[in-house]
Image (cartoon, rainbow, N blue to C red):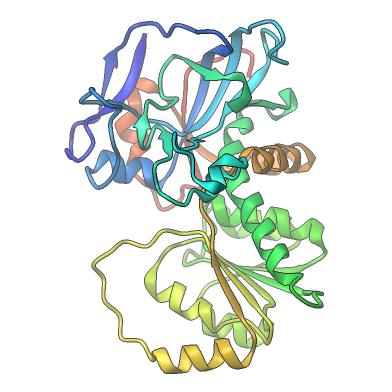
Length: 353
């Protein structure tokens, strides 16, 4: 079978190669790939900036955003042939730490976790793959190709869970949310904000393309410009920062009204310096009882929350998030970012979708 592989830490090593057919051992599903979503993490691994191959191997199968169709399922697994599934990315560390021991492996304390397609485990970027039944999530067939959004939706579901847990440290009745970045994470964060009854604002740098219309069709407001400008007029109670751009992260820290919550979901590049008035930031955060939380990855309950949110969404709107689709042989084209992209997807040619 064909698989998209990379030699981590070596730029330019991404290639499609032949791999042995996977062997579904006891308790595993054998899955025919339908699609693989592409995100910034995949691009960083392809550029040699990140990633770890499995022990004893030189190359890593890329792909952590998955969608596939079950072709073999063991008795008692809860899955059947033909089910659409997505695979969970992270696995708990073998020690395990306290968090992993109670199923909160997304909050691993010692960093010994493994991640499909990222860290020490082959990913889902092959024509067929296996996954343990306990780390597979059933996807509503009505979602079709949009089921590939399950992993980013799980990340957003966790972010909102974190915000709400922190909010309930005391009285919590937010009215306004600001999302920075109108990529997949930002748009899905806005999607999950609307049913919460919030007035939603989304900030991005582009003025045309699909993003403004996608935001408007959620009933949210689209903005360009600066975080400070938007915050001055909207006074958000919650900020979901989805870009990882250093200047936007710093602006977000002081963008909320009193008792505000900032959730950082974007990963910033290291090595970029900014001049910061740390005293002013500290003063505002302390005097306004603000809270800042980082959120990354997701565990099983967040995947289920994500699939539920996707199934409840307007399906035509979701389909518009997938702005580019290409076959495995066109991986280089899909990995190259485009200004009009929301979500780029590698399709494995499932004729039923």
